Image (cartoon, rainbow, N blue to C red; front, side, top):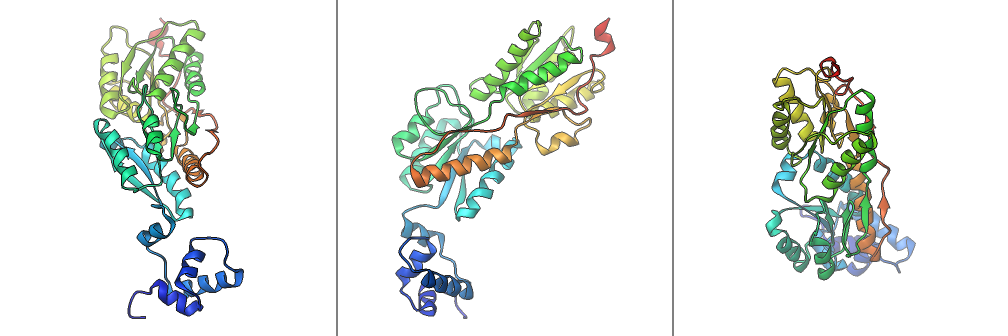
Length: 340
């Protein structure tokens, strides 16, 4: 054909009405198996697929799910590309798409209201949950299907896909204690994030369990700049820590670079632990000891849950396998200078 085929062409070739073609290709019940096969063969022969806009009109759905992120996160945090890859691997099978919406925290309420009002998405993922987060109540008010990625606090009830990151942080501290470290610092993520507070508290709890006082605690913001700044401050202390645990891998890799620029050898002079196990973690020098959370599987589980909420109205909470400690070359025995 010299022109692009249409649904009318498929209907003519299959010997059915256009409504029947729409029913078959949208998996609606009531069409005989033989007719379904004829329609699909005609569509395949003509290489015809329904446009997204036409499909949305026929089903009453946008056939898209939404993820709202701040511009800084998508540009700097390696967690999110892997998380989105997990989402895409699920929704590609349903024919849906992922709408990524950039929005700063001050504008996010209006962003969600606009997504719901314009019916641009069938549901959304809520990530980086905060203390007193307004989004769970907001999406409930808007009638917008949603899944919370991570632990949620407060009375609003949304399905959650959670990974308990506290045990692995405690294991990381125990690993350092077993290596002889007694002065173990922590570079934390943003205090308003629920998961950042959980990781910081797990570090403090593990030190208490080991009979140690909490080492220095500095903000790092989950960013390279924050990790570098905190590391410089720690290294200028009269007695620098012998080990540093970071809230994520991005701040940890920046901290490693700062320490090496200062002339320290890792792990001979300083041990470093990150969190996430992003692909870069195994390629740093030395390779980074970190807590593996598997963002791809997290994205897959979140997408499966959201698809169920959209189709059925609800789904069970999902508890992912716990994160695991991956020991690499950035951690080692306490420096000799610290034992004297």
